[in-house]
Length: 166
Image (cartoon, rainbow, N blue to C red):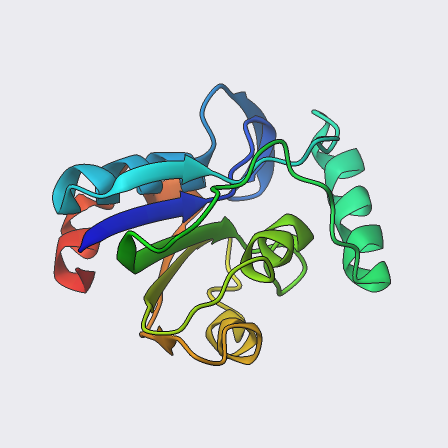
């Protein structure tokens, strides 16, 4: 069976070790591409129909509001099915100790029976924050493995850590 890397990522202004700067490719997307290269997995980007603001502070307030409301943002696209995949690498940035709500929109659409989910996240100090358990609670019929958390400031040097995790 095939493998899929499904990920949510955000470019624009991002936080890095105490300061903000603009990036054209988000940290989680960089990890997703590395994982895809190392595993031969297909890539699917989870994208909100109405994206968060480019400004970091506005973005995190929008993400916090969505988290508090348990929002399920509409996505630009969804795969018709995951039937052709038995392993899914699921990537996301850590927003307020959780996954972005758009990732829940993605997860709640599918039957996860017989699937293995490998979570990975980017963060600036909060790690996975219990998101493995949250994935287990949404995807009850899936096997969820130990996740990988990479600090966004160090994503460009993460190949070694990814290789060990895989």
